[in-house]
Amino acid sequence: MSHDKKYIVIWAALLVALFVSLGLGQFVGNAAVVGTIFVIAAVKAWLVVAEFMHLRLEARWLQLVFAGALAAIMAFVIGITPDVAHHWSVIPPKPEAAADAVVVAKKPLEPGNVERGGKVYGTYCVGCHAVDGKANGGTTGANFVDDTTRLAKTDAELLTSIAEGKTGTIGTMPPWKGALTEQQRVDALAYVRATFGAK
Amino acid sequence: MSHAHAAPLPEERTSTGVATGKVALWWFLASEVAIFGGLIMSYVVCRLAHPEWAEEAAHTVSAAGALNTVVLLTSSLFAVLAHSAATHGDMKKASNLLFATVGGGLVFLCVKAYEYHHEISEGFTPVASLFWGFYFFMTGLHGVHVVAGMTALTWAALKARKNEAPWAVEYTGMYWHLVDVIWIFLFPLVYLASAS
Image (cartoon, rainbow over all chains, first blue to last red; front, side, top):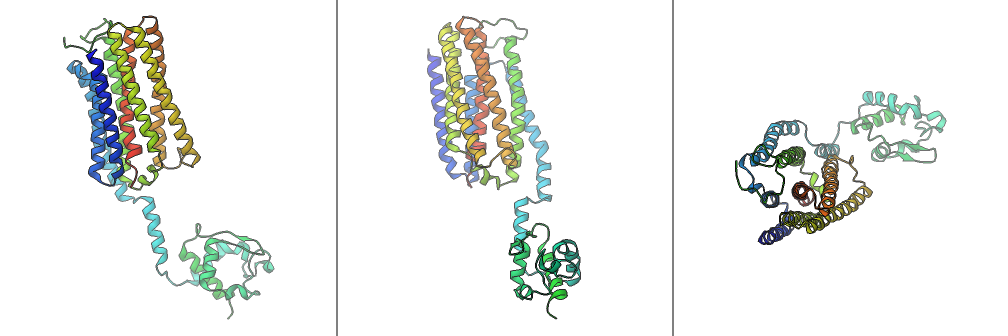
């Protein structure tokens, strides 16, 4: 049963190759190591196909049937790679875009623009804070006009409340950082200060 | 064509010099290569375009993947030893070895079920991201092939017990080896090439 011995030797070699790959897996930051791992995988696959499935001993044309499938896959990769490369060079990956946005947000913005802020206030804030900034007598939100402690806070404090939302004695203001850009929030605050603040 | 074929079993119908059943099987296996090859290479191309997937891939359980590789390689050894026993006319031994192969498939599925449970309970569902979509689709499709292989192997083992269908020992084994080969590629793709 010399065949059986050969199979067991091949099986042992496959296990050794697995453990070599596992060892190399500790260093996958290195492109050469990753390449080696996949060369090992290809060799393992070849051993199974050639020796366990006996493709090595089959008729040449039958080997070509199998090789043809592999060639079709290579043609597929060559076909899609230019599109994928183009796609991701035109549209940058999302996480990087988000990271950029954070960096931009840390940079100085344009000073708050009262005119633009008025449009933001009229669309997003007026529902609770009302046109006169009194929030229906301070029942649906902060009354900017009669409660002078409201606008006595610093811009930083108020911008944080606008961005993150706030729960106080009256109720909860939702966070606006998703719906409004930082520029829009700065503009809205400028409008509120200019329109309802102490003159 | 009168090449020497690997230990021919008593399957005589042929119009090509190779048993017709074996020609059909190789054709079928080549189509499997196209199915998994297309899926795997799509993943590879996307993965190269998304270096940040490494952080998600780091959440796969490498030890479980390595254990399952050992299990599948060993079950493949049982399958080829079953083929060897059948060519020597020992159908009882062939049957036993095929059942051992099926046992390997069972162990593989148990480990995989543990992994899926672990990943999904951590929030890594098939729709969590494109990486996890690929992960569950590739390993899930492979898992379906494991179940299909176990079914075919069980049938062949029961036939072999009755000294019937000796060709099925070889053919179901060949299918099982291909399932093993696919895993040989999936293992480094979703487990090893992860840590950054």
